Length: 178
Image 1 (cartoon, helix red, strand yellow):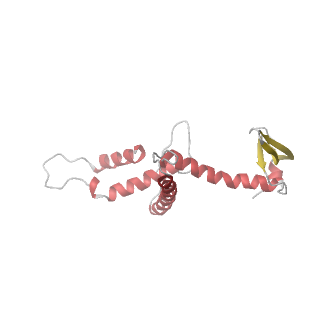
Image 2: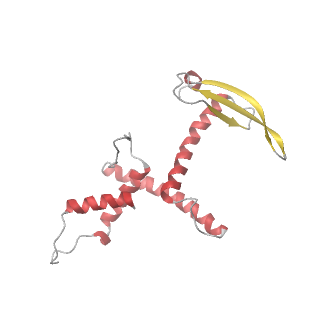
């Protein structure tokens, strides 16, 4: 990792954080500013006074990966939207959904090695790499195509058969819509 001080102006300071009815807490904060002024300044906070500013910045960068994971799990798997009433049920649901996130990521990685992930893009947003939505769609598409539930009708059926191309487009659309 490139030394953040070479890329950013870091101004560390220690202040007291006051909360009504509680003793003040010393907070070490680092104001991070982009020297090119393309990004807004941001204050990073830490309660450990012995940590240097570079370490605070590195922890923030590492934390971002977790934040992105939690956001994806909330948005696409429904964490924090459970409707259970007992603490035990709530305590079981979140770990299962986090495990499902991990399983989807691993399954998509394995499937991507066999064939590349088709990622959808929009005219106003070019994605440089596949997102979790693309990974879910890849896994759904694979499971649905392998399932007998979505199999084409038998050859002796007297109904008009749809083309495999239409079937593949339908599965692809459903994989993103589900």
